[in-house]
Image (cartoon, rainbow over all chains, first blue to last red; front, side, top):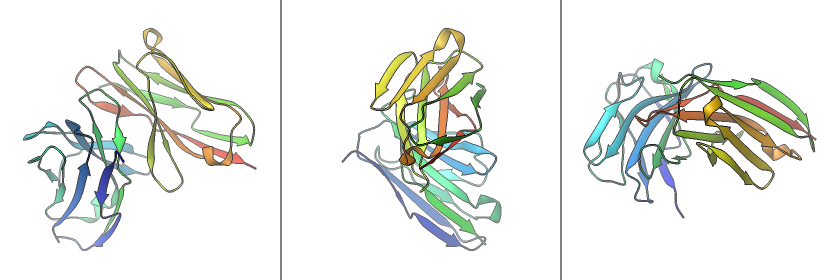
Length: 112
Length: 108
């Protein structure tokens, strides 16, 4: 089944403890992206990647890192999480920039 | 960047009713998509529709790119249609901008 898989689905962590949210797609998509969704602020792009080893900042990149070493994987790294990064995170992929998106199931992160 | 406005912000429907959701965007787009976020938080792609009309079961969408709007039609609504509907528009640089969404509640 064609899909975008995010893990974990739920995570509670403490301030400052490094964490990684994984994202993997099995559709051979070139374009991948991370979003966060917050009440009243909607969906905002954190980082995106147009292909392997090509990444760029979205609207809210501060406090996040990404890497794209393989086409299928696009992990989101929070090196020192803070409570303001408590949010619902989504990974998305598409065949190329400007084509139809497929979203993962989301990761609900709480930083205490 | 592109501004995306959706209306109405909230919609309450009785099961079986029809409705129209609107998405206005501020600039030329080459990418327009509609998504449904269900009550469990999952985002499902309903349509990729930078122009023209598409239908998928009880849902259909029309984008008039020259007039900078898109419409999503829900016919014979069911309780499973409840959730938030997002419109997202993208420019030639590929950045997809999401609207604030329309919260739809379908009552039995």
